[in-house]
Image 1 (cartoon, rainbow, N blue to C red):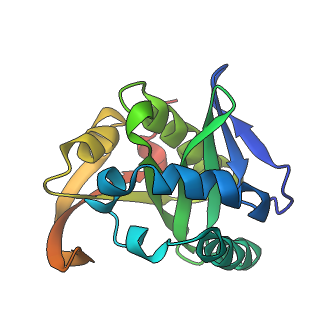
Image 2 (cartoon, rainbow, N blue to C red):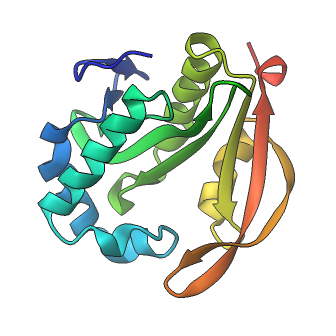
Image 3 (spheres, rainbow, N blue to C red):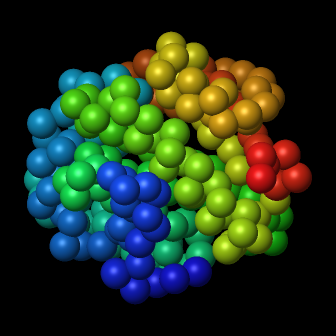
Length: 185
C-alpha cells in the first residue's frame, strides 16, 4: 500500500482521489461544515467535527490506520476542488476483505462522482491490495447511497438491523458485496 501524501488515483479527466493527509484538513472541514445538515442525516461522525483541529486529529488517526494497512482513504477532488472522501475501511488482509465508505457534498451529487470513484477504489482493492471481497453498507432510507452498489453490480446480501446509531436513532443498513471474480473486466 502506498503511504506518501502525493499518492493519488486519477478517476477521469475531472475526478482525482488524493490520499488523505493533514494538509487537506481545512478544505475538508469547510466541506463538512457547509454541508452539516446534508451529511448528518446518515453519517454519525459529523457532529464530532466541530473544528479544523477535530478533523486534523481524525486525519492523523486515518494516517495511522493507513500505515497499519487497516484502511486507505482519499479526498475526492472534482475539477480540482475537494468535494468529499472515499476509502477502503476495515481492511482485513488475512481474509482479503474491506468495506467502501464515502461521502459527498450536496452540490456535487448527481454527477456520477461517487460511482466512478468507487470503480477506482474497487480496482485498487482487487488489483493492488489483492482483496477478494468488498462491501458497501447503506442506510435503508438512503436510496442515493444504495444506488451506487446497485449500479456497480454488487449483490444485496441482506439487512443489518439497527446497525448504526445516527442522530440518536438506530438505522437499519443494507449490506452489499462484490467478489473479485464478479468484477466486470
